[in-house]
Length: 253
Image (cartoon, rainbow, N blue to C red):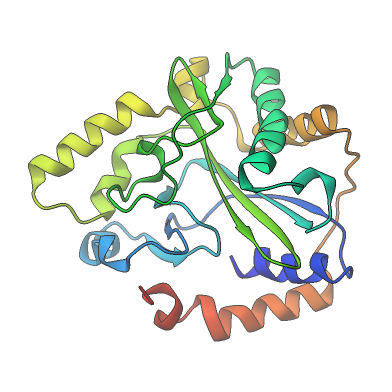
């Protein structure tokens, strides 16, 4: 999260180019949306599973990052690919995500629906419907969220590749076990993984290359592979030290 914010700051002031960053998480980590209450987290269960927790700079609800590909789109505020309001930019970037998943053989579609990204009732991202979500047979396949600042836009997204999506319910607080079980059942009915859709496991690198091709073909972008600059690295370290590693950020709500 610190690296994404460091890139956003550098892109926003013109020191770095617009960026598509693709990564995975080790160890698995529960990420909370920017405005999500920390009270949603079952800290004891999280520790028992060896999972970590972080608060994103982007909105939305909780995601358990494991067996997935995470993407971050980072662009200055005047970049045409993030132009307009939140929904307009979601719609535009979803074209690239659709193209990527179609290239993997997934029968995906984009449906406009009721936006529940900021709803308080549901702590699980993939269980909540959202506008311009990407689905397969009505089940959500990618969860995305944005942070919009004067300097630029950061959009995060999670593409579950394999595994049990209901594991996240073991990291969150529910009134009782019956409510937890019901949430897990709803999640399986409303979300899916790439492996479930295709009937075979797709390697992380294969999915990453598909996203790169999807953005290039759908949005007319030509990427150049790059590394973090010394300044980005330094700023990311500073953000870890002063923000992302501290309870004052993670548990601030």
